[in-house]
Amino acid sequence: MITNRSEGLRDWFALFWFTTAEYITSQKGKPLIKLNGYTFCSTPAKGPKVRWRCSTHYPHGCRAALVTFADEILSIRGEHNHKP
Figure: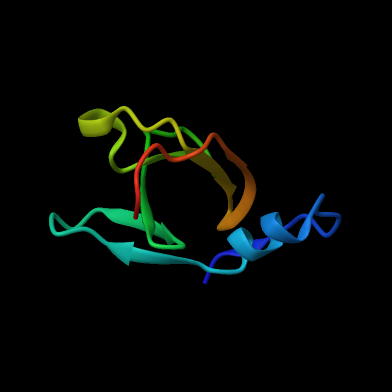
């Protein structure tokens, strides 16, 4: 389970997003994060801080992304332009 490091969330909606994340594996064996029905794939990283893009970034141009640091979500950015 992925946890939220920030205790001072700005609104309850953000809290809902953070508490429903989990790691899963893609059909090709790659790690994904599943968050409220949406999946995110990691981008190349050199340290413990990893940026994850919506897995439909390339086919549909979705700009939603999140950042993790040592299995903790630091931020979520953008909105999905599609349904889960």
